[in-house]
Length: 315
Image 1 (cartoon, rainbow, N blue to C red):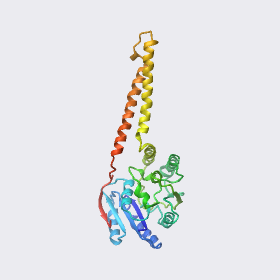
Image 2 (spheres, rainbow, N blue to C red):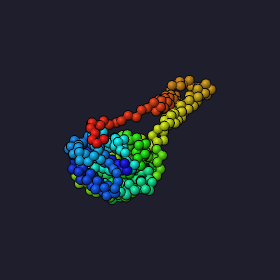
Image 3 (cartoon, rainbow, N blue to C red):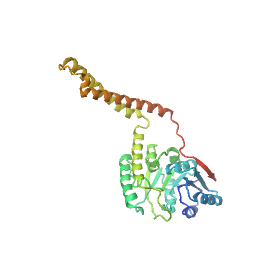
Image 4 (tube, one colour):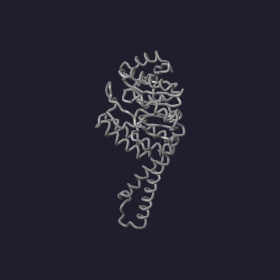
């Protein structure tokens, strides 16, 4: 298998037939052995019925159906587990990603040897307030945090070596940060390609203003996991140790002052330094304990699937 096309979708009944026909005509002109994997992320329209009809006519088109809407990250994760192609291309099902980009993306991986190629929708047909402007801020923050010089981290159309998508683990909303996850896993040959972006033909966007906040929270999570995910004691233990030292020094000061300096007979509990010492030592102990427990959990963790598949076709 040379090429796998992974397409997550949610309520895209009007686009599926046109999308799959367009992809097939383009790939067939390249004489590649391929598969198309459609992941229905709990659609409430007729998307699954259309997928079943398409799969019944084409054995190399496969369908997965989730029990409910688990999110794009889980849909991609399920597709990645199933795909067999040496090169894997992801794209959205809303016809805004152009299937004509597939041959060039395939060549960048198979011939040029990149590990990952991310699309860049340089000219976008989305709402400026809800998508374009937040995306610019989000991508700037992602570049500064990750050190990866991409202009569009969240572009739906991307190409990967098969080994890349088999090594990364997508949880929560981490589909936005696949390039960062790939880099953290050791894949450094990451490139970007300007791709055509079309206006949406059918339906409405599935993302609201809350994606902006969620994206930044996921970015903070990813940064923290990358820095301290394998050594949480380095973070929690360091803060805990600093606070314990501060509390201990205040305790020494209070004891010395009470024994050798203080003459007014004022109780230690009447002095603010006592409460600073007590508070910092308690919080420091809690941070230290949190780091210790995190280390234990990390060494015994088992990653579980976060989605449930109810039906498979041609899989």
